Amino acid sequence: MIQFGGEPSVVIKLFSSLLNHPNCSFSNLIVATPCKDSSILRTLYQRSYSWEVIPFCMFKIVDLKKTLFSFREQIQSKTELYRIEKGTSITLEMTDSRQKATLIWEEEIKIEEQETQNVVSLSDIEMVRLLFGFSPENFAGDEEQKRLLVSLFPLDFYFWGLENV
Image 1 (spheres, rainbow, N blue to C red):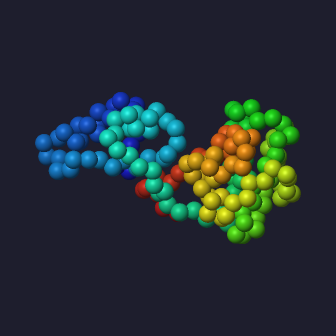
Image 2: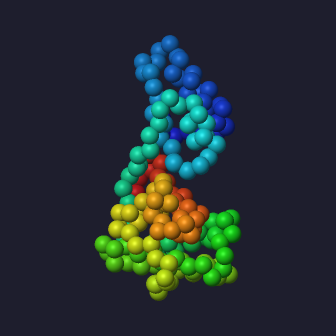
Image 3: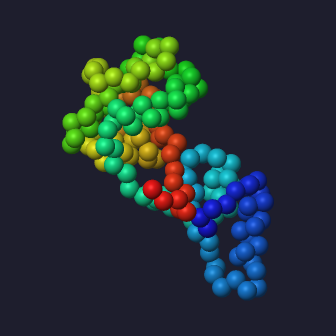
């Protein structure tokens, strides 16, 4: 199942109906969904006898600063939601491509190239996992970084299986 929507209880009833239909020749259903917290995802977890998290596609960050700038509004919203203090900053560094970008919280978030003392230095692949993956806390150096990374990432970004780029 690639595309679905609606009230979680109705979706589950629809899936159950499909599996119990007399003409149904399959015994399980694979449902592709974004791995971000939602009522439908929680309902699927509760009703599923198994589940797995796999990347839907592969990404490469070509320009770290522009990528973060593209998600600036989302990062700003998360900053307000998690009450990240003004004056906080963190530098994200991609070691393979030698890119750096610093997030600085002022009245609005700024994205600069200057480096701060609070640096998260990752390979290019690990940076993709931090920004768009499932476990940002795995990349933190200390508890303060962990709190900040978990508050900001992953960024909400998903291509449905029926879309093409």
